[in-house]
Amino acid sequence: MKLDLRGKNRWLKGLGPTGTDPRAEAIVSAVRQDDSFVNLKKAKLEFRSSRSNVLDVSSRGRLVAKRPGVATISVSFGGKSARMPFAVRAGGGG
Image 1 (cartoon, helix red, strand yellow):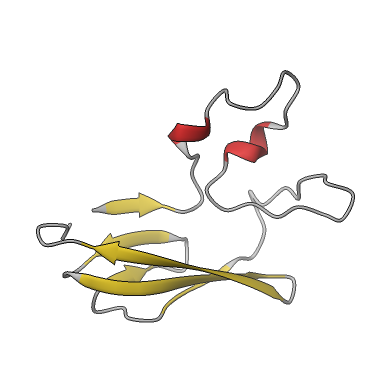
Image 2: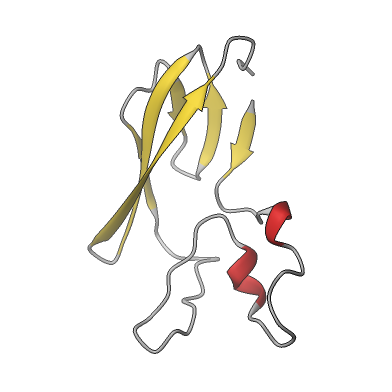
């Protein structure tokens, strides 16, 4: 399995009301207090995996499954960070 965290979430395409900011479809997004989206295209995001032997993440946000297990991926931007657990099933290596 491979996944680009800087890409779009295909499951969200077209789900927002007309006029929804297209950045709402991003896998990783940042929203200001006024509900506007931060442009992350050229932002310096820092990615980290809690278990790179299970799920590795590059500095560019590309995930590669290595073996079955669970790993937490963290992304940091502007002093804030968010985390998401991922489960890798058998046969999920890429």
